[in-house]
Length: 362
Image (cartoon, rainbow, N blue to C red; front, side):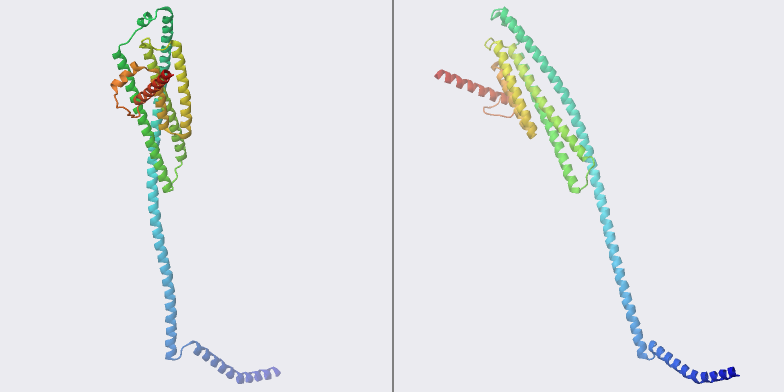
């Protein structure tokens, strides 16, 4: 009974309170809908304008992003084209360097072959020098033996005497051989200079292109060693020429001695003195050439040594074919061995005249 009474009382209270709650909920819901939804034409237009503005802002933002992407794409394409062009340039430069490397290696092989030929020629000249020395020693021994056993005039007439025409022919052949050897040395120096210029140009191009070659250091070392070896061969070659010239003229002097030369002992002393002077000058020249690496200076000094030896050992009769075959004007020096011999001979004559004049005055 009490439960039924309580239920009825609660129902009555709910019926009395629920309408008020319902009205409040409806009022609040209406206010919320009116606050979020445009209810008039102006509100609708304002909402549409706001939506359009937001859409325009978003669209402009997307356009900026698209423009940035297009700029990045353009820069990427430009960088790709530049990289492709640089790759082509590097490839062509590498091909050029490889061609130059092959050419330089070929020139090095040619120089090595030439050095081998020069070594063989130097060996031949050394054999000729030894043969001439033995011939000179034999003739000197025969002359001394003949001078000790025969009268002064008979022994000299018993020796074989060649005609002046044969002597002139021999001297002319010797001078022609010396001239050919000088031209050959000049050609070798020109080739070496061209090889050095080509190698220097290749190294300059390599530094400009910044493309290092793996074998460039070994190539430079090989080129340097070949240059030094070629320089030594040229020095030995020119020294052999001077030695052959000296011994040949000395042999001819023994053959064509007319009885007015010095005695055999004084000749030996003079030859030994000249050889010692030649050796000292040669050592000095080689030391200076090794310090300065100057091919032309070495060649000029070796020519001077050869000219002094030739002028000191040869007499007027030996040098007469030289004057007949290669006439030159007075005070003219063309740098050849013949002109140097004439200049040294003239200086020796002037010194002899001055010494004789001073002795006469005393």
